Image (cartoon, rainbow, N blue to C red):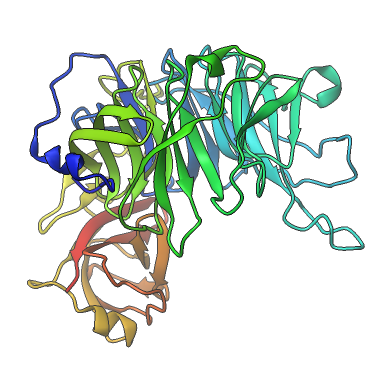
Amino acid sequence: MRIRTTLPLLLAAALAVPATAAADSIVYIDGGDVWSARPDGSGKVRLTDGARWHSVTQADDGTIAAVDGLASAMTVMSRDGRPLRTIDTTQMDTPSSVVFDTKPTDLAFLPDGRQLSYMLSTAECGSGGDQCGAKAVFTTAADVAVATPLATGGDYRSGASTPAWVTNERLLTSGGYGRELELGGPREGPLAPVWSSPGDYLSDAEISRDGRRLAAVSRAGSQPVLAFYATSAAVLSDPAPPAPTPSCRTTSGDAELASPSWSPDGSRLAAQSSDGIEVVALTVLESGHCETAGGSVLTPTGSHPDWGPADPPAARWIPTQPRGPDTPPTRPQDRRAPGGGVVRDGPVGRAVQVRLPSSALRRSDLARGRARLKLTVTAPGTVRVTLLAGRRKVAVAKPRRVAAAGKLTVALPRVKTSLRGRRTLTVVAELKTKVRTVQTRATLKLR
């Protein structure tokens, strides 16, 4: 178990996570695309292409929304990836003079899927610099082409970030220093501070559906930790619910910790960490005390998990269209590449693959710019290699133009980010041809 707490009783992590027949799914981002899987890691289905997606969320019926980073627009899709609509954001007239950009992040569906919350940041600074870094959470109807304006029913919460819906009537947000977590209903603002502990810097929080458990990211120390709190069911409807009480925290900081998401029954939690997406069972969570029953890694390269009660799709939706001899496939098929990674096949076949070193790569070689990777390219095009630590880019090699198929050695630039404590990096090798862009991913071990 990689998510550990400070209490000795939590050494019971050696116990296996109880099997469950619940029809749950976790949607997440991996390699810049949207995926869906069962909590045990089985039934994984990639739902998008293009490696440009972020901020995924799902409603109770499995409807998914994510941001297309290329278009900076929210896309709503069915649980099998079929696009339903695109929601554009515009400059909103707000009660303040702050000007927000139109690039949404941190999407959060209401459980019933009728509305969708998102976060915007400032597009520019005011004359006195007081608008720099400002954030706000907006809420729009989910069946529109342009985000609902405030004047016609859109919701707006100034200074808020990282929205998470507890019920269809209760929205949890982070409000910053002194008002870390706030709970409120649509169009009425925060009812009362749920947790206001100066110096704790809580954000990215979620409350379980029964209202009795809260998990949040605390940035009080040099590295973020996950903090757990016992709450009361009063948070579901009471206008002034009691404040949560601390239960436990993870023992060591992790720069990649983010997006805690409770299972529908509140017994397990998925969260992003430097090891990918971890799933942990919490058998006891009460004031001053937690107990766990084991954990697992859903995927070592994923991020931004969102847990919902719907089944994952049996397969990805494929559009029906005429096929000619030169028509690219509507959906690339995934298969394993020799030496690790997933190859996305296209009209050029297995276009690019990474040949991993026989032994783990030295961190010192990466830090000094001495690292080399070997590729096999089976079509002409432009090759780009990226190294990821979790979802963070740590190195991007200069694009290489190849005129013919063959073997290629790519020199990686110096990695300036500290890799201390990291056991793996993700290699993303991309080949852009005249027909399409194909990509392969592999896990690189470090020593």
